[in-house]
Image (cartoon, rainbow, N blue to C red):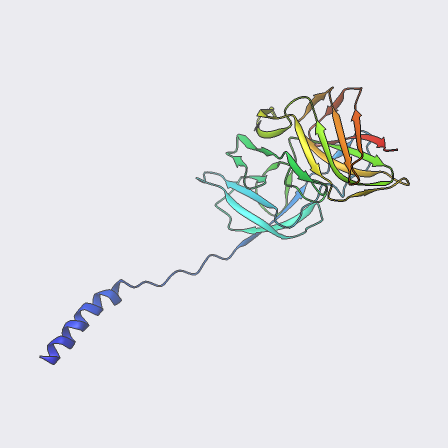
Length: 258
């Protein structure tokens, strides 16, 4: 009787052992190299140091014929316009590469968010607010450009800032849609303001300190800035002339705070 119980137990265990399969080892991650196409300025001043990648930045890679994109994360190159990213390549090229990976890109349209709340380090050191995209046949050296432009507000004075609010008079933050074929860029609703947390940034009388705003391309004739210092002083600055923002171009405004 005891032997029968042992045999029955073995008979039950054998099928379970037969169903056991080893978990396949995860695929080794690939490394791709991505650089941001250099922005120009109206005065043709060299700006190769801006914009640059930072820790935590991501890119999406959509392979030809793939059902969904793959997400790659920054591997090295924080603080530089060229960096390496790691992930698993989703298939064969050609590829569409875009940033951030949280955006939606199908190879024809590019949809994402222009942030309303940014820090004074964005996008000069961090790219959370700057959309980028590009096409590549291989992933050895990918060049990305932006459908947006950037406005550089140069401030001079002797104070410590708390915040800078930009009211553009038309939507500049919220959802956007970009057609990758003809370059058409449109805001889908959104707000007219961008609020920059200056986080105690100091400005000096000896030189201008730049603060950056990502803006959709177009003409702006109602730009207004509210600059708040940590001591509570507020400076209001309105731009009288029309400011033209072009994709991949820096435009600059300068102000001295008394």
